Amino acid sequence: MKIERTKNAARNILFDGTLKLLNMVIPFILRSIMLHYLGVQYLGLNGLFRSILSFLNLAELGVGSAMVFSMYKPIAEDDRESICALLHLYRTLYRAIGLLILVIGLVLTPFLRSLISGDIPQDMNLYILYFMNLGSTVVTYWLFAYKRSLLDAHQRTDVVSKVSLVIQLVEYALKLPALILFRSYYLFLAVQLLAQVAINIATALRVDKMYPHYPPQGSLPREKVLDIVYRVRDLFTSKFADVVFNFADTIVISAFMGLAALAVYQNYFFVITALRMFLDVIIVACIAGIGNSLVTESDEKNYHVFARITMLFGWIMSVGSAMLLCMYQPFMEIWMGRENMLTSDYVICFVLYFYTMGMNKIVNMFKDAAGIWRKDRLRPLTAALVNLGLNLATVRWLGMYGVLLSSVIAISAVEIPWLFRNLFREVFPREHLKEYVILFCGLVAMALVSCTASWALCALLRLGLWPSLIVNACISFALPNLLFFAVYGRKPLFRESIDQIRRVLLK
Image 1 (tube, rainbow, N blue to C red):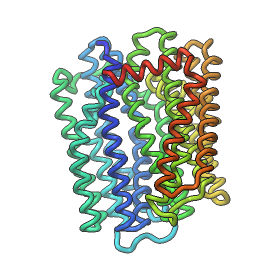
Image 2 (spheres, rainbow, N blue to C red; image 1 turned 180 degrees about the vertical axis):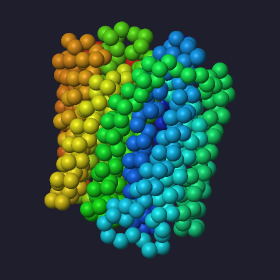
Image 3 (tube, rainbow, N blue to C red; image 1 turned 90 degrees about the vertical axis):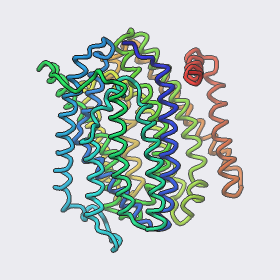
Image 4 (cartoon, rainbow, N blue to C red; image 1 turned 135 degrees about the vertical axis):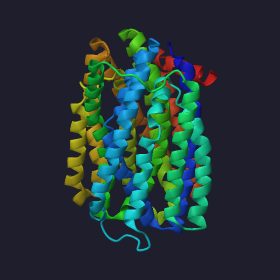
């Protein structure tokens, strides 16, 4: 079976992008309402719970990625028996994972209070709120989560997006009165739990209708099961690294600086998360098609696709970073008020984190699609330990600077160079490594020039908040694009990237 990669990518980007837009705008409103009606400490606590649950999700060990990767070849060969057996194994593993997360979550309960510096609001029970968050995570694994692997492997994540759009609109409509009328964080979390149950059930029913010929039954040969187990084992280090970058920073700030400082930090980080959602839309939309391409196309052609997508993402990240740098402070002052703002030097750290994280995701996308987790297992683990060590070493005397810069150093000095080495040893022709490094470094230089020029031009203007936000947005969008077209406009790779965008938009 040959997947219609461009058509599916376009469809996924449309619906995933719509869902991400919803999940950016409405939570932004909810966060503002929560600050107004419940207070800054609730914001910090909400972020702390999300980080703890990210840590508990380590129990997933990368099973989902390993299983989806294992389906690429059977789907390409229309091997229904293997796909059904994979689903059966996946269901068993996810039920066990849900139970493991529940047990670990209960074991961590006595240590909750030690993760928070200072006081917590007196009108809430920390442990009841924690158990409600824990239940929301566990139910995700127990209610048909394994069926989503069919959609991921067939590059049909748009189906999940459509289901989620409908249910989350209802969820948000119920969360608003929970905060405004009842001022109840308990009711807020109860709605969230019920919505997660509804999404899982509705998605499972849709998968059954689309793929009735793939029941979860049968068994795999022992060597195939062992191969999946080894992939899961190797994926654990990647999963651990992701958790450290998203969990360790939050826990360190909460434990050393308190919930109020954590809330301010997460207000800024929320903006990055919203932008990262759109980047993830493109990655999720493309990764199954890339996996299919790596199975069916030549190494030379796959390298050319890699270079073209790097050019496209480098362009996107340059424009996004420049806009973030120039719009951050006016936006934060309008949204949260001057009393909940950080200084501009923090903004530079956040933008550096956003850019390095985004460029790392581009390269990492091809590593995941190629499934070279075993060869890559030490890289994310090393980067995670570097990040955690620098966090603990610098937070006392650099505060949030140390937390942010630790992540930037770990990504740019460990993750990205090591990824280059692994990809050009295992996936792409080695003779193209130097060519690719030059391309990548050129894109980084363009981003630096674009951000500096945009920042300098915006700094010359002295306008009110809303005029500054609008004018800075126009400048920081137009200037990087003009620079990119001036430098790369005549290069074949850039023109191919433009053609790729046109093909996706016209599908």
